[in-house]
Image (cartoon, rainbow, N blue to C red):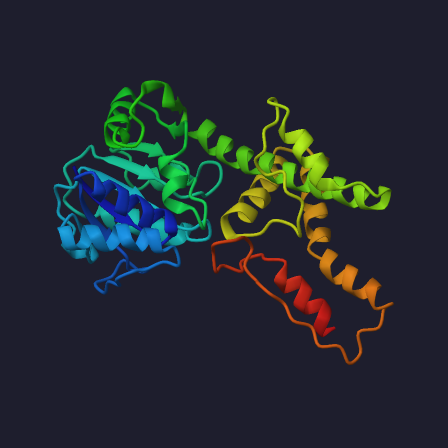
Length: 327
């Protein structure tokens, strides 16, 4: 298939690389303004860069300015960050001005909250629209796609469903791996998954504080919980709080969505509050250790990213820690 990919996110890079890897011809519009200039992107994840460079050399992946994207593209994939809704709308508006033969398959791979896909669809109503949630994990980008057991896809027609299944067949070969549902349901499911994972993290951090006061090793508690097959081991590590651009944005968007219905979610509020308090824990331990007097002390900090194997410090605890140390 001929596929156009828009966006500079890690999701865009991973999907461009993997779709090219399986023989699709990829035209990647990497300009953040979708104008004539293009940029050759690279990421902190060297495995992603390896795939991208391999497909550039093979000729299956080409960075392309907007005006040079062929008119016979079969699939359009939009992978913008959660804060780039205006850029996404500008992109589909420009596409609506091109003499494209409709319908085409339009895939929203961006997390714009509920009705985000529908906002894009308003500019290209004749096309088939799909919501394909971003499940990319920084530090483990390629495997977070290839190793997923099930994939959520929001669709509104059998044509879109069949085309998506054909497009993703190299990654997900069996029909039971696809969880097809209406687009709005899929958008809410994406946010709800992030909410569930955040809840697990904050719950373990809450337990860790109690365990410390009781002289209990939280690692033993974690292993015991993880051994219960009803729960599993994912996202059970106590730490200094979660961060990252997309994950944190999902939690805030979910909380805002719930509030917008008139309901009040005390659980989501507590999850966020516990997480923000947890970001202060290292400073509190240091402060207590030196009996509330850090004058004359030199403090070295090893690592600043919000998680391992990434250089991103977006919403990382490092910001709160530095602010406290400088105060």
